[in-house]
Image 1 (cartoon, rainbow, N blue to C red):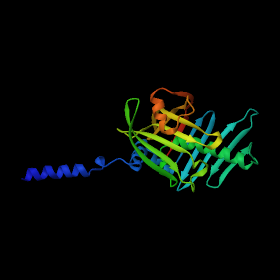
Image 2 (spheres, rainbow, N blue to C red):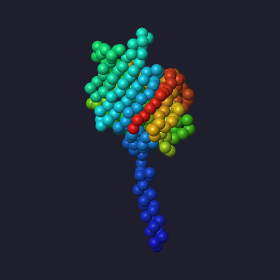
Image 3 (cartoon, rainbow, N blue to C red):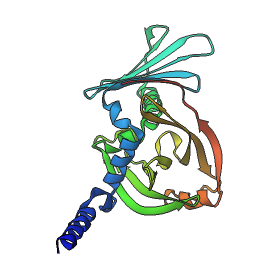
Length: 246
């Protein structure tokens, strides 16, 4: 009787274990952030080089500052500083006067590089709305598919954009993503993660940037198009000279 009771308790414990709870969009994202080591970026600095431009990131107690430094064809040094108060551009140390349109474009381009580098860290932001689409297969491997949209308030200029993320069902690594965007001309892209490596415990990845050969493909069917080989390589997202200070 005692042995039977012990077995029953063990079975009940296993059934109540978090590992056996149904996967949700939130639990998948939380597990991915933990696997990538990105909870450390809540209070951290990092720097990287992307396409010959140097970026820095500082985040401390909700206050952030991103910078981008580049040298133009005339040798002038251009520095964009984006923080909670907005963006300021300097050229050889002098503040540049920007139209609202150009200010918005520069802000989005600086933020975009940082945003994609940190993923899936930003997927718990207040403006994010997540939906779990179930388990799917990519290249014969099983993934949790999570769709992300944004509320308008707090969603920034990209609140209408839509994202799909695919997390490995074994370790929750974010191996693929796709996004439909409307700003700066719009488009549909899918990214395949490559070159995974850990720096200071944080998983860093580069990406192959793909687009549909057929412009009629929508974001809900882009995974199927990828599996069929119907996407073409557009570019590679290679992050270099990465330093992370926790």
